[in-house]
Amino acid sequence: MSKHFFFFLNKQKLINYIINVVLSPTNTLINVNNIKGNPKFFYSAGMFDLKKKQKVKQPKAIITILRALLSKLKIYKTTPVSLHFNNLFSAQQSYVFKRLKHKLFIKSIISYKYYPHNGCRLKKKKRIKLRTRTRKL
Image 1 (cartoon, rainbow, N blue to C red):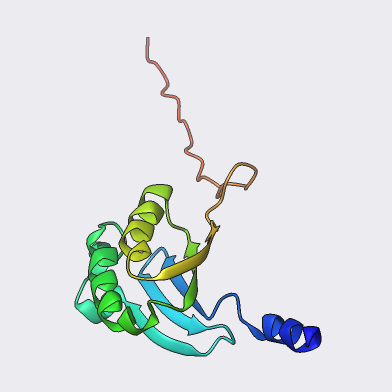
Image 2 (cartoon, helix red, strand yellow):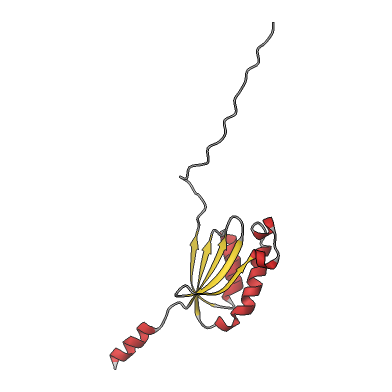
């Protein structure tokens, strides 16, 4: 009997879905995948008629995408979910977490930052030639 109980515990999944929140330099994306990587939902800021800097700089993009996402995710309230943040600042991460923690069963949170940090070499700057004027006496 203990073998069957142990088999049941191993078969139970810890996380069923992964929610990726990505802030790229040109767009804001949120997608929901199952644990095998098959997509369930995908939203970008361009789908909500946001243009240019509205897609990245303003928090309006994250708010509008989360509203659409929460209306679709009511059926996933009891399934364990993992949140993955890419290139989001801590204030934005806490905002997204506060909005989702009452609606979903969040099991883990992982944050990735791909922006350059200390030690990355900067782009080569163009040198400006300094020309001296000749003085006439």
